[in-house]
Amino acid sequence: MTFQDYGIAAATRLLDSAGIDVDEGTRVLRRMLSPWGRRDISEPSAWRSDVCADGSPIEFSAAFSASGVKIRVLVEAIPDEPEPLAAQQSALELTQGLIREFGAVGDRLAAVQDLFLPDAAPAGFAMMHAAIFAPTARPEFKVYLNPAADHSMTGAERTQEAMERLGFGKAWTAVSTYARRGFDLDRIVYFGLDLTDGPEARVKVYFRHYDMSPADLDARMEIAAQHEPGFLGEFCRVLTGRTGELREQPLVSNLTFTSADGHIPESATVYVPLWRYAESDETVRDRITSVMADRGLPGGCYRTLLGLVARRPLSDGRGIHTYASARVHQGRPRLATYWSSELYDRYPPARYQER
Image (tube, rainbow, N blue to C red; front, side, top):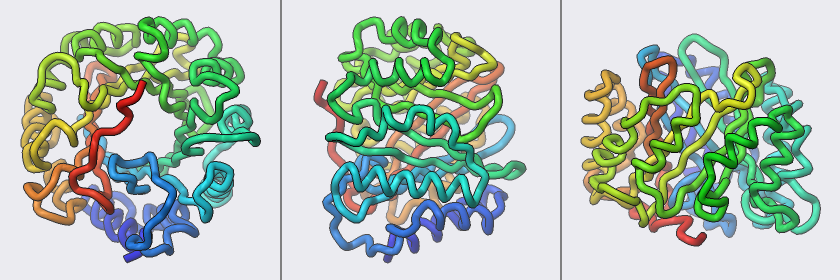
């Protein structure tokens, strides 16, 4: 099986079930998997992807809200040679393909490209690409950039400079306030950009929070214009079966900024790690179903989509569910679940423990 074989088959099932244009969705995904998607999955690669906990370079997810469901796919373009400069080239070729063939807008990315894709001694991943599909809209695209792209700047310095260039310089006050324990404990790990234009185009700053309890993070998230105080603690407790700090696998969150909202974060989203806090994906499924029922979200739709992406009994591993995220938008909850392709390991180890 090639990466393209797997990706197109899974996308077809998910998009069709969600009532989304399968032909358009699979055309997009074929481009996102070109040319590396023609490789056989069984052939070992020296390039370990940052997309999934087990190193798989393809992740599907579904976002649920009162208005319906969206299907999303995240990929990292695997380079021919396992080194960062080659990864940069593969990522840029994919970006240009999405701009040329599907109307993605790369102006803002171009403004910060030299920061995140340095010519000298780059490190880590180069860029990840996401496509979002909805029943009544054209596909949307975004990229995730690496704040630790090299050692010439810290992740915080690189992010601050990028926000200045994009007209969000005043928003840095909110970022630094949010990370008031310091950028070692509240580490900036991704910088997200919508490949669109207009006042609603988003800039997202992602954090990994070491040694932080859900209650403390909940209090931090009140900095956003839209947040429901008190929701996060119970959300984390039900999903992980734990109270207090999640030390084995840290919490992740983001702050979202748009020019329409200026320097105040439009929203804050939490990402709860799942694969290290349950014996199996069957347990995680039941926990997510319970949370969705409590929030009036379509748990039946979630279970159907999960059944379409899972390639084994849910009781035989714990690597399919990676994260569940939640935020409040205009007073209504939105929840997303993220599913690893699980191409390499159904019991992936903890990641990102160093700080």
